[in-house]
Length: 461
Figure 1 (spheres, one colour):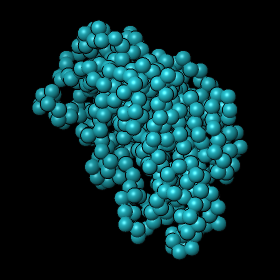
Figure 2 (cartoon, helix red, strand yellow):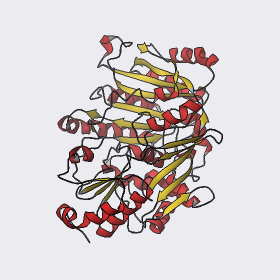
Figure 3 (cartoon, rainbow, N blue to C red):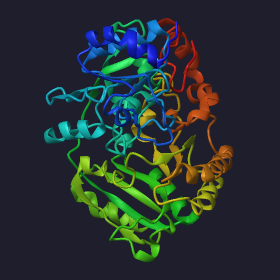
Figure 4 (cartoon, helix red, strand yellow):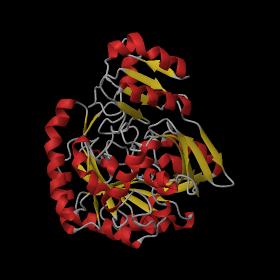
C-alpha cells in the first residue's frame, strides 16, 4: 500500500500521534522546514512526516506505521550522512535527536548512550570519570551512523574502532521487536552492527567499552604539501607507539592565528596529533613532528580529550554542500602520495580536505571476520571530501574528486569505508564488505526480508 502526504495528513496520522510520546511534524506545521534540514545541504527533501522519537516505544510505533503503509523510512541520528540517508521525499523520517541520554558506569568502564547522541554528548559524559572511547573527529557527528559503519577516530590505533568497543545494543528490528544484542544473546546482530551500517534495525541505545583517557597532547602541525613530508608521515605511523595517533589532512591553509597569513588559502598538509600516552613523553612527540619537514605553523598542547574532537567544528557547520569518496590502502604507496600532492594542490575550498586516518595497531588485533567491518589488513582509510558553500560550486568540482579517486584506485583496496561513500557508490557495497557480505545478506533476509531499512548503503535481502 502506498499513499501521499495529503492522505497522511487527513486520515492516517492520528493513530500514530496517539501511539508516540514524541513530537510529530508535517508539511505546513510551524518548524517543518527546520525539522527537515540535514547536515549536508545537497539534500533538500520533503518528508511526509517527521517523528521525533522519545524512546524505543516511539521507534517501534514509527516502524509499524512506515511498514504498514509501504512508505520510505529514513532513520536520522546526528544527520551527518553525506548521501542524505537521514531524509527522504514523501516518506517517514524517524529522528532520534531527542534521545540523547548517556549513563556511565565508571567501575565497569562502560557507557550506555541513546541512539540520538552525538560524540560531544558521549565525551561530555565520560570525561569527568577520566574515560573515553573511539569516536569521530567532528563532535556533532552522531554515534549511530559512525559506530555501525565501523567508526574511526583519534583513539583508533590505541583502542580500536568504535564498533570494536561496542559491547551491546538495544535494537528495534523491522518487525518492531526490541532485541538486546550482546556477546551472549543475539550475537549475530551485534556482529552485524559492528560495521554493517543501518541495514538491520534502529539502535535505541549503544553500550561502549571505555578506556582511561583524560588529557592528551593534541593539535595541528602544518607543513608544505610535499611528497617528502608525506613519506615522512608514513614512516611516523610505522615507527610510533599506538598511543600516538596522527591524522593526515591535505587542503588549503585555514585562517588560524598561528599559521602565517601568507599560507592562508594556499595548499599545504597538516598532521592532527592525538597522543594519549604519558605526559613525560610529550617533548619526544613534538620532536618527532619537527622531523617531518619544515613547520609552517603549530599549536600542539595538553588538552582534555573532548577538545581534540571539536577542532573541525567551526570549519564544518551544518548547511554546507558535500560530496565524498573513500578508499582503504595497505601502507601509503608512492603512487598514492603523488596523487595526494597533485590533487591536493587543487583543493577547491578551505572547508574541503583529504583526510587520511591510520587504522593499524588495535584495529589490526581484530580478525577480518570477527566484525562486519572487513578491512582489518588496511593501514589507512582516506576520505576525499570537497565541501563548498553553494550547490553550483560543488557541482563544478565533483569532477575533481572523481578524478582524484580514480588516481588512487591502483593503490587502493577494492572497497572503502562505508561512511565515506556517497549515494552513487551503491555498486561498491559488495567490495566494502568482501568476505563478510554473504553472511550479512543472510542476516538481512532473516531480520529485514522486506528491506524496510533500505535508505543506506544497502545490503539487499
